[in-house]
Length: 327
Image (cartoon, rainbow, N blue to C red; front, side, top):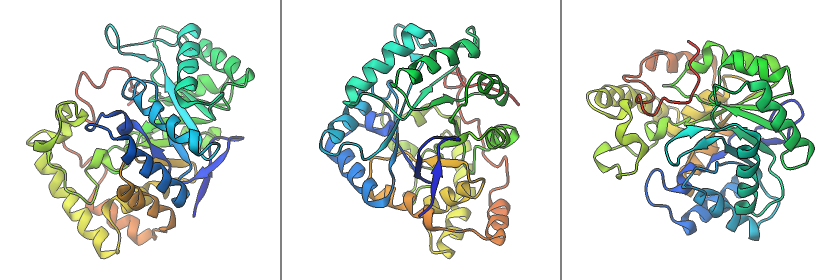
């Protein structure tokens, strides 16, 4: 089973982590018992890196994890995030006061006195990233966080931030249908010794073994307004993915396993964090840690899903507010 390091000096974790956004109900009503079964199975599978955030279910995801940690302390490397404000309207706040207060609240919900990794979830553009880093360094010196992370930033922001202090991890969407990180971020993180933590590596379910049906999306499902899941884009995308699923079947793999194995082959600093609260789905995701793809496999995947194949933007206009665009 592969293990990878979070930054130059950070902890080693299983090469596949677990994104916990679904614990907060963003893809449908959450069930604590089901989530806890998934966390228990994660320990069996060597998936020991959990990624959450204070806004996932307005703290619910952290509470679900915290309840599990009471019975299983010190078993996971925990990462959480702050910097997005959803009330009264959605915005971004990277001030020392907001980040500190958000972290303290997260620690309380998780039932811990520190987290291994703390991300700024979205950059507040009016505030110099150097000032934000100074806040994070203070939190690290106080022992409240083990390492510093940034989410959805550009390579240029990473360069500036790294001049203040080492950034252990940068989180960005990265998958077979979202390959923007290859236009600079993949290279910058490698050069600086920073882990590239890839969220949505299964394309928000498009590469799962269970066919996605937009008609069944719940009212609060993020994908209801996502361009790639809206017709006619969805039909075009499904046709491509069907060919990929057939290739995965020929290799004796699920499409989710193959999609994550492809990401692991992009660099030894890439750490995918598929999001699920299903133990069965997590088993498929974690299986990628034991898959080695040959150059022929990679060439075949590229032919089936050429870069840029996806129809529709990865976010709607409303969803795209916050991530830094650099290409």
